[in-house]
Structure formats: C-alpha cells, structure tokens
Amino acid sequence: MKKTLTIMMLALMAFGMMACGEKKLTEKDLKAAEETLFNEDGTMNEDIAPSVAEKYCLFVEQNPDAPSAPLWLYHAMEINLQLKNSEKSIELGEQIVKQYPQSTLAPRSLLMIGTFVYNDQLNDTAQAHATLDRLIREYPESSLVDDAQKSIEYLGLTPEEIMTLILMSQMEVEEGGL
Image (cartoon, rainbow, N blue to C red):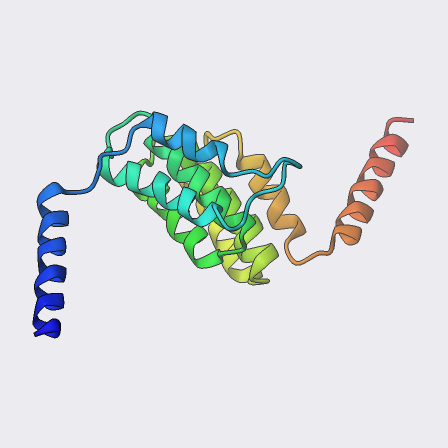
C-alpha cells in the first residue's frame, strides 16, 4: 500500500511539473546568478559555476532569438573553460558558431576552442591547428585572424619557448631598424 501511494505521489508531482512547465528565465535572473559566480576574493566559486552556466544555456534555449543569446552562451563557455570542462567548452563554442555565425563571438569562440581547449587543455595541436585554420577560412575579415595565425605559430610551445621567440623577433626588428 505504501509503495502504491509513493508511486502515485511521484506521478502526481511529475504531472504537476509538466503542467506548470519550466520557469522562463529573464536576463535579470541571469545577472542575479552571475552575482553568485565569484567569491569575495574574486575567484570563481566552482561549486556554483556549473549551475550558473546551465542557467545561461537554459536562457538561450528558451530565448534563442534574444540579441544577448550568443553572449550568454559565450559566458557559459568561459565558465566551462575555467572549470577545464573541455568537452562542454567545445560543445558551447560550436553551438555559437552554428547558431549565431554572424556574431562577433563566433570567431572568438573558435579562437578560444583552438587555443585554450585543444592546445592548452587537451594538448591536441592537430585539432587546434584545424580549428584556428577554420577561423581564418570562415571569418577572413575578423580582427582575430592575426591572433589565430600567431596562435598557429606557437602551437605546442611552452610559455618560455613563446617568450624566447617573441624576444628574438623583437631583436631582429631592432637590428633591422639600425
């Protein structure tokens, strides 16, 4: 009897949730969630961050035509980057490119995926190169093309090796100017 009553209660609760539907999020809700994202010292609250990113994604799902939709997806991608959730970061970046290809955040997403996810987090220089090439090919007018080309040049290098290349390049420029 108790088991039957429990099953009936669960069924009623599920029906009630479906009948009411999910609360439609507003940008005010997202800004309130964003205020909980950081600790007093400015570091990300990693316990709260995944749910904040999910709210951003839910807002976009509910409001795909909102002018701010690509920005909220990008913020969700940034959170996942900081959490080193590579798979989710790639998924969100690709969603921006696919769903909002005209947004300035589309090429920026490709740059982030290529540089920070594939190269830095996953150490997959081949995929990083392919993603950065894609940015250059699909967004040739983007101001990020130069950054993508430089990132390709530095793929797989340590920060020390990159700094050495930059210093050597500066020395060559200075010597050439004499």
